[in-house]
Length: 117
Image 1 (cartoon, one colour):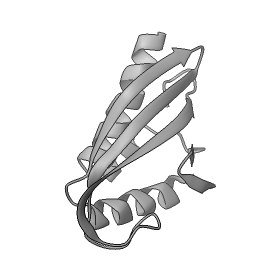
Image 2 (image 1 turned 180 degrees about the vertical axis):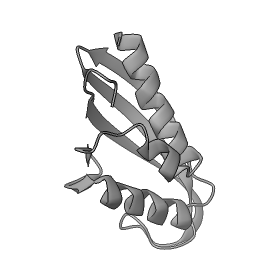
Image 3 (image 1 turned 90 degrees about the horizontal axis):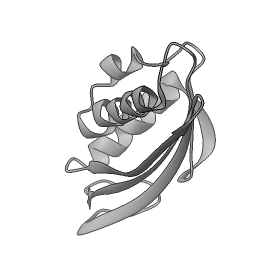
Image 4 (image 1 turned 135 degrees about the vertical axis):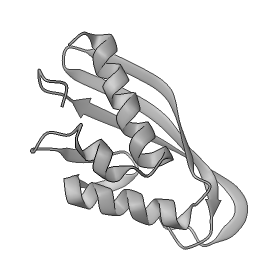
């Protein structure tokens, strides 16, 4: 896959999971060895843990929108800098409920195999 194809897969994965909540569909883009690491989370999550975390945050922030600010690819690695934007209706990410709009920056490195998973 070209680096543009890899970036497209990562952007699609972010859109399906974070913006649309289509976790089962996004899981089809993941390899069986999927691991999630991000700058705003202090632990590594497997596929089920990732889905649970996304679902929990989406429930707490029903108006959540994730904007990919930067997406850079080299070889089989993709780096994303994203901004999570929304109001928190339930405690999440260490923040109490609020009607104020919250903006959180997150960075993630994605390593994809030759199949783009």
